[in-house]
Image 1 (tube, rainbow, N blue to C red):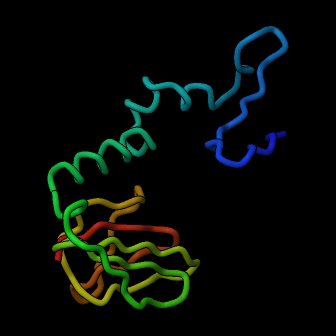
Image 2 (cartoon, one colour):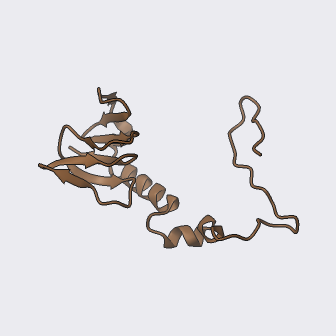
Length: 130
């Protein structure tokens, strides 16, 4: 059971330890170490590394002003410089208004196009160069 964090403290993950020391063995143990994350192209570690590389290669991601766009319920779009971030936080596909080069996606699933426009699957996000 996770303990409540006092105000002003960062949230943390409480890991329950095996009675004999260390984490209990399990099928997912490999996923929680760096070697396992490095070996998995779809791991959180590799996704975050891709985000960091994208930010370094595109200074407009931190230098340009950011603007939010009107989008359907359950979706989010923001623009910064010549890049836009689109998040589909709904259970329905979302056809984006404009086209562009997809630089990064949150999903293992290939980005789908319909009549030249990106279609995000439910719970998928992309960063697009306009």
